[in-house]
Length: 149
Image 1 (cartoon, helix red, strand yellow):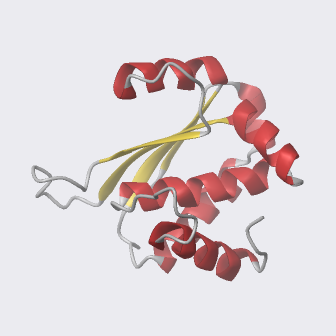
Image 2: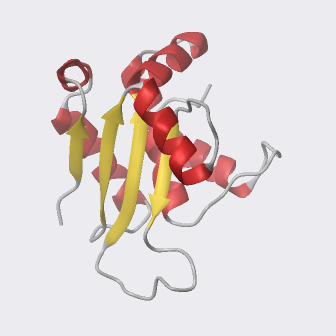
């Protein structure tokens, strides 16, 4: 199946070329042995992600990425390859990337990886040495040749 990528503003499509984003998703899925899986990815603004965060998580604040898995939980016994939805706030990611010293696409690559791991049921704790963090670091370094900052 094909990944579905949507851009809520045309300027985001210019910043984050669909072919590069889709290629990155495919690399991640291949690395995780999820070649037959697919997901939806939406790029939005801070207001939209805040509204979604409030509606679905009862948190009235902006965030960088939200993930809604379709494969975890007791009632998710079907396997059609659809992992779920990832939503990324482009302005939030751009500001976060700037603070970390890299461009918006580099930050988005990390957020997509983070979101995919959540879709697959991984979760992080306050412990930066947790399993999810180590997996993110390992995969990001392997696929980009660069360390996570």
